Image (cartoon, rainbow, N blue to C red; front, top):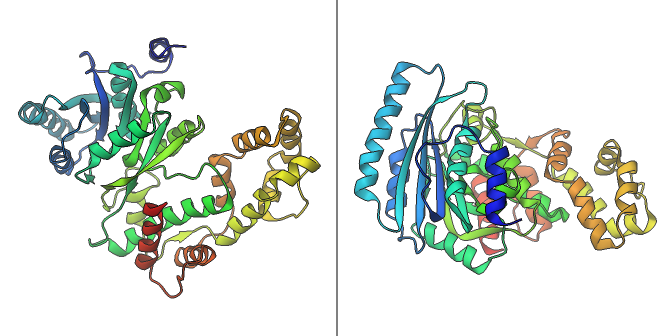
Length: 397
């Protein structure tokens, strides 16, 4: 199927009907920013404006959205924001960098949220995209490093086969929520690295403000979903499943550490509910996961689970493991094929469910245990000190 055929199929079947009436802008790179009563949006746009200019034609799509039934005050603020941004974009757009505000003022209450707002912007981008264009997500409370455009362009130029990428991020550690955000980001990085340590191949950050995808891959996975929370996790893992997902580590996105109750989980909710101690998954569950994954070749040869009865094996058995394993082995003429099928079954969603069955513990302890396993002295270090170690590791991979 050609790119244009895939695009037609997508817009016939999967695209949101809440599309701007204007013709889409043609670009090589799109940045999509959803914005619902965002007071920090202008700082985000100024950050992009002051980046090293992009080398490719780039369009920043700002989706100013409100919901059906929102107050007249919220509606008036949104209308003024769109008008102001239209004036600002005329003054600040260039031949290579265009700012395009979109006002969507009637999101249905049932689906209104960040997922639908992202989808509106990403669908608009996909409609104007070329076969080798890419779409990057950013949030309206983020600042980006000056080489943001350069790094993304360079990554796609050097990795033409990639379907998408996770972009390196760092929360501020010097604000009023410094202790809370250090623990939260430590949880994110510990969870990511713990999965990698086990040998699990789908371990990537899935942060909505720091993900990028090729336009063709966006169409192939059916586009962004309309979830009100966790939309980034569900979307990016569909893209990861296509294979050849990568990471951009030579630039940085700086998300906000603000409190928020807009979504049931995520950074804002974690900041709001923090009470001095953030808990995460115990390291022991990853030890048991690693133990089983190291035996995949033996499992394939013997056509059964090892019978060790650890928590991860018990979890798989409770997921119709014997039947699924038999099916996977039956259709796998080689061990490499078996591994591909196995990790389509044991994907990020199942690993997350496995982790959520455990009793959580304060993040410092398991984060230290993992670093010790990796040969890094982490004894008696604070959450911030542990986080800085994880950041160093991640940037040097």
